[in-house]
Amino acid sequence: MPKTQTSTTPKTSRPAVRGVPYEIVTGRQARLYVPHRSRHVPASAWIDYNRPAPQEWKAIAQEKGFRLQRRIRDRLHVALECHSCGSLTAQRVFTLRTAQPRCGGCAETAMIAEARAAGLIFLRRDKFDHQYALYRAGCGHVLRRQFEIIARVAARKTDLCCDRCLIVREQAEAHRQGWERLRRDPGGNPNYRLYRHSCGQVQRVARVNMAWGQCKCQACGGAWNARPSFIYLIRIEVPDSDLHLLKLGFSKHPIKRFRHQLGLPRTARVDLVRTLPIATGHDACALETAAHAQLRQRVPDAVLSPDSYAGVVNTKSEVYAPAAFAEIMRLMDAIELAHPMSSTPLPSAMPVRIRKPVRTA
Image (spheres, one colour):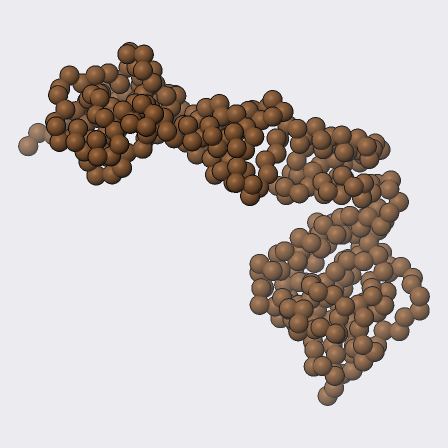
């Protein structure tokens, strides 16, 4: 049998959904609401289809709150006139027969009312995403938001914030503290922003801390976050309670930290396993926080609950079972490789006696 010859004529591409507005004005100067899935059809296609509509279709439309005005586009589509608002909506005959058609005019009226209840003015649907629309806020700026968000705002379940006004407010907050707002957090944390200090230092700061002035420049601030610090790992054994713990943290004085601030009992055996010198307390805090997040993902079973060491260690988190030792050491190796520093001795603190663990045969 001869092979089937394939046509070399290029196929016409389907028009993009974003190319046609949601509402189409027909030649009869009447608004026609078109469902989202048919928005790719050009406006010129929504013309009358000169065939009579069966009486059965008209009866079904009457039962469902519409008047079948005419057939349009092709044999499969009809224009339904809503009994409530008089708007015309294009629907497939299959939808009319098997489901409850939705009136586009009533839907738009509900959107306008919901936007007004949220303190906004509904402008139009978004051409790129059917779940979004454009609104004008009281400040005059245009907002693009999901319908679900506007419904929650109208119900007083949440608040709405203008992005442009928020940036202006954050810039003013930073200026009052001697900083300049640059942009959002490069790491994607919505609670942080990137700021530049008057000395030229650029660093991440929590937005709420900047608003209250609770921030120090790690280059010239002279606070703890500008001074050298350490990331430490200690092993804690409490024979009386049969506890074996690992504590990962950061401090300028690790020895003082575990002996005088953790509230350990006098019978506790403490072993300072490892310390990593870090240039600033700001960097040490960020690295330690990231390490704990990775440990919670990699060894979740080794993360101890506060109830297991209550009354022994004066902390509520960042305590692990001995099974996490190998993973903690791997993380500290990675930190040391990424942040190399010369060997820095531990700072002198008040005299402290470290009780070495007792080795049993």
